[in-house]
Length: 118
Length: 110
Image (cartoon, rainbow over all chains, first blue to last red; front, side, top):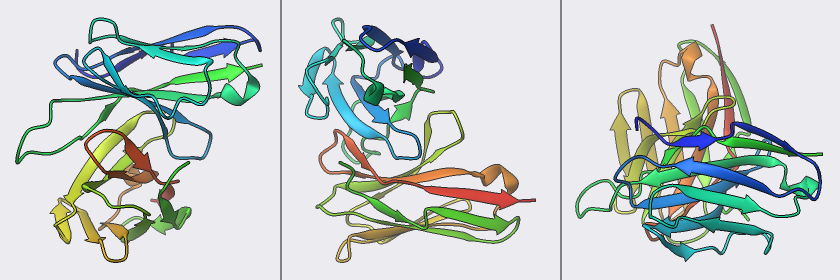
């Protein structure tokens, strides 16, 4: 595709509800990242995949957050039993393979999913 | 926990003026990047400067990096109304996650 695609763009959930957020990265991009952006703040790292392997999940705030990328392409971020503090924009980014001498780790972002937990 | 600090938090200028934003970080880095975010949109990469570089230019953008002070600045020359957006610095330590600053909200008035 032309860019990173995220769906849905907006999600309203009742507290306690489970949600699933989808990310379609740019074709050929092996690395995929999830970030959480609170209102008026910079994005904060959640988790990182290289192909289907989840290499870093140190940013996931609790065990209610789970991410997967089973075939190394589309990724889903799942939040179980949503809480009001989960309200934020969830951004997905992808990046091409790192190459020697070239630009390193430039990330291409989707428009995000705005999650509101009532 | 964000590692970057940016100042100013907000900047309002007239079209044609220059805008300067500053960023400080805490740990060693491989490179530092600047991104722009328009309201309600994703981030767009602007420019990358490696840890062994001191200055880089791209069009109307000029980035400096001082690794001894762990700081960087982004200068936008001859600003336009279309430059109105939030600007974030992001540090890359090992080619994985980016650590973002809190951002500078730039408003360019026509």
